[in-house]
Image (tube, rainbow, N blue to C red; front, top):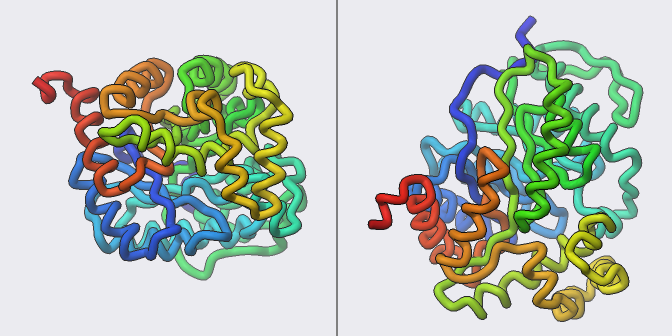
Length: 342
């Protein structure tokens, strides 16, 4: 039987999230640009109303050579955990061992469109990780919890993969620190990362010694452009989705009106996206996106990385994604080695 622990691999340090609202070939081209700009990971976002993330990731695998690839993040509600385990293992196969599995509780507003309630999200994510690891180890799996499988197994050999848990609440962050190979902290403001790092540390204090290395990564919405106003305007759509699903303590930490966040969420659930985006205020952008010029973005990322091991620039990246990746590559190089900017 194989070990449940993934083999030692170069960990994630600088990543991007690519949203498959574009055709997969265009996502692949952006991934190739990110690899050329020095990024070491690319995540494909997972929402039913975009193109299939694993198709996009397959194209990304073919268009790149070294960059790590994975869903960012899949959830166990709209896709069964055993299927997620197999999809991730297949991606690992076609990418020559470059895959990782990002898993989280999913976006509440888009799951509501499917008539799905996020029941016991922490248990669902933890059990998804446990079932996937057992399947990758070649076991026949019976599990009767939030996740249910009966005598499930893969009909092919699969290598174990690193599992990154996406989260922002205290219990999910602590669970990730204890059980996962990494965490993708869904936030954009340094104050949130300072608090989140404390939660992850609590979990890591209980981490078994044999679990291996751990990476705490910021997974922050970024909108970058040479024109600050254009960058902030492009931030409205993702900020609307983030704000609509943000826990009340996070909203309160930033002085955000709870009724405003509810209004944004209700508009999204109703499919009234333009109304939702129009409700986004400058305060919401400041709280939930790293938005502005390259200098603005570099300053915010530098502060965030005081609390994390890695940084993933998530959607929207900017008003022009190709230019945004180029600009972010410059920011990455400057922060990784200040002498590069001299």
